Length: 264
Image 1: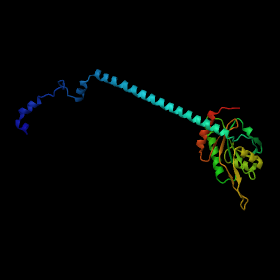
Image 2: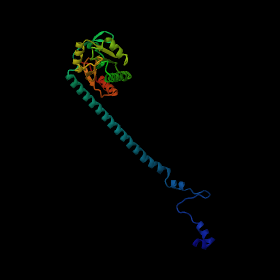
Image 3: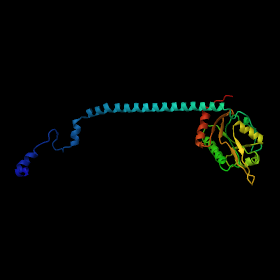
Image 4: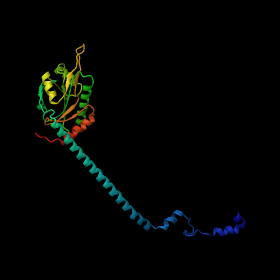
C-alpha cells in the first residue's frame, strides 16, 4: 500500500535498480543458468571432474576385482572340500567290501554274463523283481532318468544300467525281456538260478525275502532298496538310497567320473 501511495516516481526509481553480481549484456535477456555456469569456468569444472572421476572409477574397479577374487577363492575351496569329502566316502565304502565278489547270471537275451564283462564301463545296478507293484518301477525309472541325463552331457562316457532280479522263481529270461523293454533300450536284465541270484545279492549285501503266497500263488518280495555305482575297474564306488533324486545321483556320478583314476 505504501508503494501505491508514492505514485509513478517511486516505481520509476525501482525500475532503475539492478541485481548485484548479475552481468548483463545490453540487448540480451538475463539467464540465471548462464550466470551460474559463468561463476565456474570450463577449465575449473573439467578439473573437478578429472579429480573426482578417475579416483572413483579406480575404487570401484579395485572393489570389483577384490570381490571376484574372494568369490573365486571361495568356489575353489568349496570344490576342494567336496572332492576331499568324496574321496573319504569312496575309501570308506571300499573298506566295506561291497561288490568285491563275482557273479554269473543270464541276461534277458539268454546270454551268460559275469561282472568282468562290464569292466571298462560305468554301471548303475539295481536289485528288484518284475512283480513289484510300485517301488521297483519307480526306482528303475529314476535310474534310467540318470542315464539319460548323463547321456545328454557331451564328453561323458556311457553308463550301463543293469537290473538283477531277486525273484528267480518267476523272473526267468522271458519275463525279464518283457519287463526291461519298458524302461530303456540299454537296460540289461539279469536272472539265474536261486543259488546264482543269492551269490550276486550277497556280494552287494542285498537283503531279500519272499513273503507268503496268497490264494493265487502271488507274493511280494521284501528287499533292500539301493542303486549301486560301479566304476570302470568293476569296483563298487557309491550307492544311492530311495530318497536321492535323479538329478542328485547324476551329479554324484559325474563327480566320480571326473575324479576317477584306474588302479588296475
